Amino acid sequence: MVEPDHPQLSIARSSFYYTPKGETEQNLDLMRQIDEQLPETPFFGVRQMTWHLRNDGHLVNEKRIRRLMRLMGLMPIYQKPNTSRPAKGHKTYPYLLKGLRVDRPNQVWCSDITYLPMRRGFLYLVAIMDWHTRKVLAWRVSNTLEADFCVEALNEAIDKFGQPEIMNTDQGSQFTSLAWTGRLRRTGVRISMDGKGRFLDNIFIERLWRTLKYECVYLHAWETGSEAKAGIRKWMTFYNHQRPHSALGGRPPAVVYWLRKDETQPDQQVRRVA
Image 1 (cartoon, helix red, strand yellow):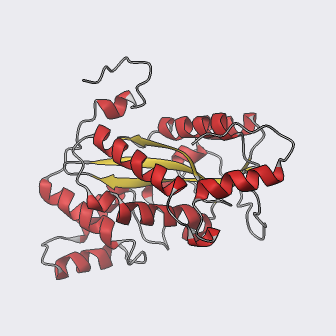
Image 2 (cartoon, rainbow, N blue to C red; image 1 turned 120 degrees about the vertical axis):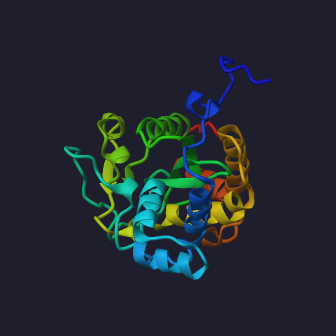
Image 3 (tube, rainbow, N blue to C red; image 1 turned 60 degrees about the vertical axis):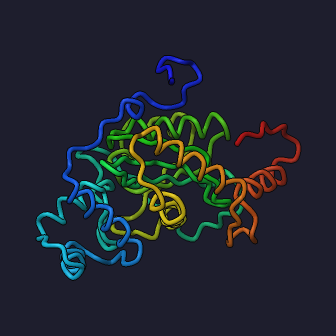
């Protein structure tokens, strides 16, 4: 039995007391099919996705598919996702990575949010990734799109691995919030944001989502937030420490992260963490 107040409990209360979203089984099935199809055809807009589902025998209209795609935070590459719109009054920042040679750990971090389909609902996942080594430094699962879970992941990453020189995200309201940008500015991190409509500016974390979903998420039908977190945690550990990465010469991200960090900081004692 899990004790909610146990000091070692790593599951946030919002996930421990997870309540599935109020969508019908039919809508949840459509959302899972949309989620599986979009990585194959990221250029599909609402109309094309509606036609695709109709061709598979689903009686759906564009209004319904638009609502579901917005709810999921999924839109095609030539439009920014619903989760990537800055809130009114939030400041956005320029894209700083054009032409930049990223050749060491903690030079650039990136972050993004994706949708996690479940058996009777859905959750959102945020990850903080080191751009050079592709290591996932921290992540959090939430049943809302408030900025809090993103800031929690950022705080964990900074506490464990130090701070980056640059943090790159899209222009979503979570990443333009004062809670997020204030945390970065207080520690002297330069803030970079993808250009509007520039899907490929954060390509490495987009590839992480695709790999995660095909190797983990789509293979399970989690019932609760606790099950989802346990499944994501197991896969993230495998990804960081065991999964060969083609861009890293077949080595896992964590191995390359610590190797390169030792090379760039030979005189410093580094506390190694997962």
